[in-house]
Amino acid sequence: MAAGKEGFQHATSCHERVIVRDAALAHGVAMAALPSYLKLKVDHKTVLCRDLETYRSLRDFLLNSGYKSVYETERVGEEKTAMATFACLSPLTGERLAVVLGLSAPGEVSHAQAPFAYGFAGKRQEDARTYMQHLALRTTDIEKLRSYLESKGAEFLTPIYKDKDSFGPLLQSFTRELFDDEWFFIEFVQRDYDAEKAGPGGTQFVQNTVRSLYVSKQEEFREWEKNRTKRKFLDGVPEKERTKLLRDILTNAEPKGYVETVAPISRNVRLT
Image (cartoon, rainbow, N blue to C red; front, side):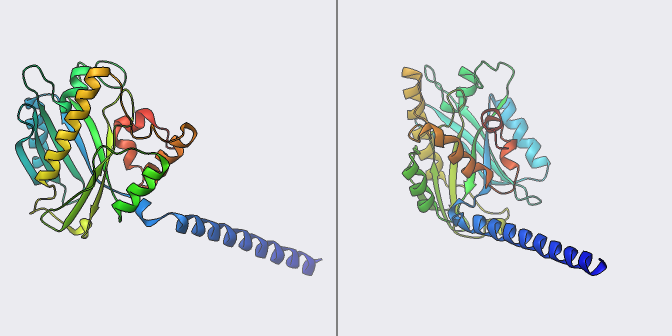
């Protein structure tokens, strides 16, 4: 009986190890199946400000909290409307954050003022002073990533901008907005250098790209003001596939859980 029991325990133990091994292999296969260009990392996020007081207060708060400036301009955009932009980096955590103030003109609203002029999350937000406008996700190959997403039916607002910052080549492309009742979009970035080791002391945003994005966004916004409808990022993706594609983009982003800190995403997408 003892030998039989020991034999049974040994067989059971071996069977359990096989299950664990097979599960690990299956997990490894699943991980290996994910293309490297879809293994995204958070690069930065951009917040819009309602007014100059909010913009200056947020800028000062970040600088007083240890963030270092990596880009700043008082005005960039078109002749009439434009935006002021301040971008910073935390040497401690590596987080990049851009702060933007839309500069409207008489008779024309800057697209960077849209959430405050027209509301978001389906209603007016009279007390809101900030709005998270976009999340930038870093990829190893932006051309492959864009081709893959476009093959699924996704639509981009801009081409791939190719330039250099202080540390090396910088490629960026911006999607159309994701949701009807929000002003949120995604930026894909490829930095051809070790972005994790690029500390403060140099410019990490490109003026030409910032200006080109502003012009494209303003043209898109003018079209929305005319007809109050949006051409969205995933409109061309079959409806039953949209949620899966968006989850593939967002849930694989590192660090895990970061995308849930972006309010327009957490309001509109269930990631768990």
